[in-house]
Length: 226
Image (cartoon, rainbow, N blue to C red; front, side, top):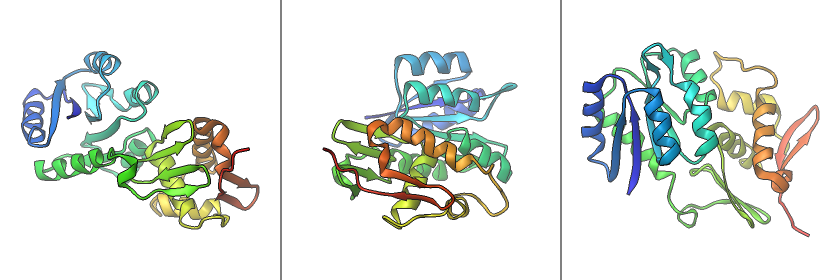
């Protein structure tokens, strides 16, 4: 059974969310403040966190980085009244996997939850992108190496997916930007480089599957062991 942790300071809404999500084959736990949220994730790593963006005067997005450190495989669905494009982009870049503006329907929330939990199927159930000894599973945001599994954040997985659509072909950085960000938003020139660097750190000795061609862009190549 999958585990969902709901962070919502409106107690009536929190109970409604629990009622709605309990129809999904998961266990749902409620917390109403950030200290309680931290205590739960430190002891039990949920499959999904459904988080209200603003808890009192505090932005719960600040808690996502910490969550990523101790439980990188946990997905995050952010609920918020902040529905502007810039706010959504800020939420995604802050580590959220999905972003649902308030007000929303429980039916849509359940669909989003099912979609996020669906990413946790076994790798054998999804056709992966083979890169020599490494396999990338886009829908799970997972890279499987001979030494184990490497979970990626949503944007990192999207960048790999973008590169995998043109295997062995150099993809310009601007192509990646236009594929992943709205035309109305222009990320910092080094944003893609930062995501690539973090991804490589996670991949360790398998980081060579992402090759940099300075002044041109990036491409995916196969990893062949010795």
